[in-house]
Length: 397
Ligand SMILES: [Ca+2]
Image 1 (cartoon, rainbow, N blue to C red):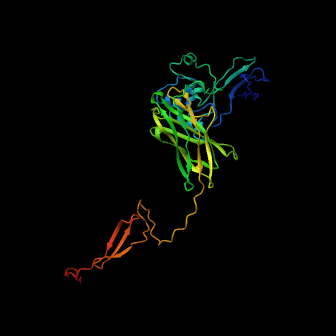
Image 2: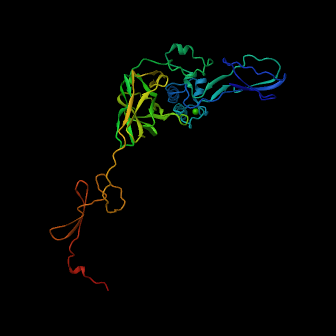
Image 3: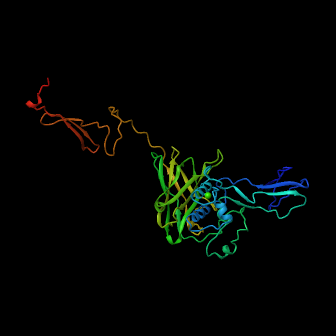
């Protein structure tokens, strides 16, 4: 934190380890304004994560109202005086390391904004400021109904934002046996492909309404499409399932991290087993190669988040991998076909029929036929002999 006294002698000083500060060399009787500041956190910084996302969503849905105070202030990251889906999405984007669309998440907010000392002549003591990090809702406020230790400490004046979220504070034992990253091979002819992340049985009674996690991959073998993940299986309903490859300095790699954040828009809990969501991957290498997919170590490991903002790891987080069989062999060039009008071929219809175009019927009439690939006649045109009826020979004069 730096403190600036801009008039009449501007100066600034960093605060000590315990937040203490001294501004000296001031002119007795001068008027000074002290303004605290602190550099904002960078996107994906520790302390703001899926629990904050769900805390904001829970408040918006009026399932768990955040009382007025630091927690609510921290949740209104757009600064419009309320917590709604804009705030939820901005916090999620910050957690995912997105460079934009994060509103004020990660910025420090001080109360009061500044202190003014008119005609100061003596030392001042107890000149504290309360600081919070916008978006870090659960770091400043945790209210879990029925949790006496939290209720007893539910005092908005005691704030410790700098420690951020203690990821083990709200952890409960696992109720899901395993979550597994996909493990399989991709054919050399395939560029984009879908792979499922799967889970063992989840009981709706455990109220799991969100999850998050990081895993690493080798970007020389695979990478992810612009929307790296998608709803599927247990999240096929009204879920927000988002992902982002975390940014790194240029030249870093080749092991990169995909971060995933998901929550139920309407707080319908997960229920069932099988596909939890899907990865939208792209094969990079043209040579036969493989990459492991490995869940990150704590605090970035895969966790479920329940409707009471408690977290739980699955009993087992299974790694996965993708094996690429390399580029497909070059196919022989197809024979040159007669140019045909550019048409969108429909399923099962050969836009360029090459045989059976003309036949002659037993009556001696010419017939033009178009065949499907399966050999069915799609179109048959026959030339009929012109009947010589008198009504066809009327002359117009
Ligand atoms: Ca807001």
